[in-house]
Length: 216
Ligand SMILES: N[C@@H](CCC(=O)N[C@@H](CS)C(=O)NCC(=O)O)C(=O)O
Image (cartoon, rainbow, N blue to C red):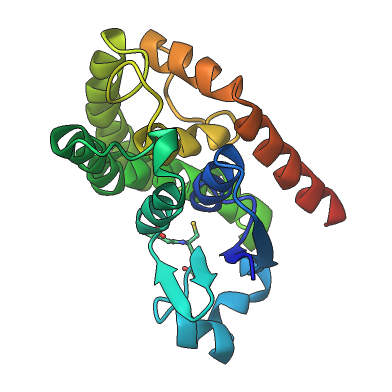
């Protein structure tokens, strides 16, 4: 049986999981968890993921939640692809940036996604919380300076090769325009985003997202 990916496709945290599965050409089945309908709180789903959040991976009787752990599981199915290097230091470098993503980058971007996408489109709330945006700006610029500095000297986040770190951190960029990230001044982030967007797996995942959204 193929790996099952429980996702709400518009979310960047779903995007990173599906795009890695696409990049590795792994067989998988999408199981929709429609956050707009509260499907993350359905008892059968909550039994798999007690956080009542997506994404979740199920492979036979093995269940895994937390998107970056799921990415590592997927990468380990195709170690030869190099998304999670075998060399200890190279691998820890990838893990370091994935942890940085969760701690600093993803959480900064999430403020803008909540204020400019989730509130107006999913909750019907059209007032922006100025204090939240101010906090988001401060956190975003602090993290973006670090990422931009890293990418000024490296093609990808951890060096010359594409790794999971690019999928983890780059997935947030799929929301950059809609969520109005203040990203314009960061030229190296822009260059790297274009590189990711040129990946066939990136394009395929965007297409899957668009098809899901078109269904309404
Ligand atoms: N750190 C978790 C975050 C998961 C998460 O927050 N997912 C959100 C959507 S992006 C969710 O399912 N929210 C539903 C809810 O809070 O009810 C991961 O990366 O998997």
